[in-house]
View (spheres, rainbow, N blue to C red):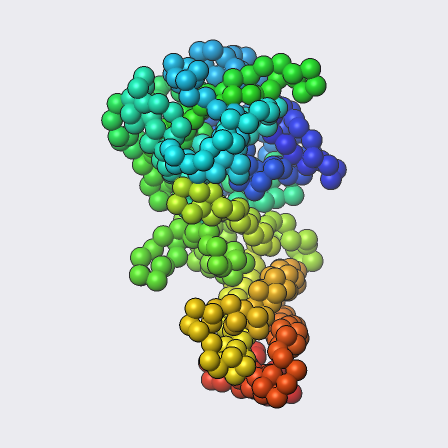
Length: 511
């Protein structure tokens, strides 16, 4: 069962109830951002399979602006056989591959393997004693973990023998959303979020993938390396079984149905077309000059690339962004109706590391203003952070002139104010976007300049304050005083340099 928020509280609801009450429920919740995205992916697949989706851009706008409900999806679900939704059916378990039963007793592990954040990597010789730990997961929680595995699981080697199903069952492919940022348009309710993200499709939608062993999809075998298959339609795409998974359930007197053993092997590998299958992706250029979808970075916060999302709407890039750009602004003073939620999973090769996310306001007609604010805001923050590092280098070189090269990074870090600065800059950036989004699109194109100037003033004051705090760790002697004065002078001189953002130069000129 999905978890949703209603009246500020998280509650579990059945699928039919979710669609029937989609205008009452505020949002899809989850233990992690990736879990919430995975549940949304499955709900989109249900809508496409049920025919509850637009056939054209015009119909998409009519559904969004008319707030069309999802009674059709609820009715479609109610008409399906109960066996289609049984997590523990022996022949067609929901979201799973019953063929793994042959290897289950030999290779199954504890439930930690099912949860991406707990399992570590899949290396065959990894210290995996934790996978044998006891414990269980409630069935609803286990199902959401299955959905997350299907879309986000990293590549690697499965802890499963290939002797019965074939050696390729151990070759785990990369999940279709791993390695890129998934952008979701969020509305005020679950229904509005679904309407915004159900893109137009006029052809066959494909079947909803409820289990590995039934349906018209020709599944791969495991005797040889997988040949990627093209999705048969959006229902097939959004419910693709990216892993072969099998769960063992039992009844627990306290929690009801629970899962206590898990087996995971290779799943489907899809051949994705960037235009038809990555409708939310924002293409950016790498340092090598190639284009690829915006990806999660361990060293760069998502808000620093928010301007790429607004640029996509401004330029009406095909897919989600052209649709959002086609919406009309209703009236002056309206609340900002939507947000662009960006989610990614950082992985170090086969090891999941951390979820990253960013949530940015969007109102129809405001892309130009928000692009200007976000691009200038990111540029100003990056400039100040780089200059804080230069000041730290000057301080370190002055107070530690004879340091060993191996010690340089640690010594510079003592005086580097960037890490606290970035956290404060992110909060200030969010406030800037909210301010600009509230301006209204009928303002002249340069209307965002005022809020950006105020943002720059706040950020500059923050940078100066945090630099001063870091330099307090300098020794209280002549060399320490010299290091402090040189570092501050370096920072202040940089603010007036020709490559400084205009907003910063204006502030310095007015001091």
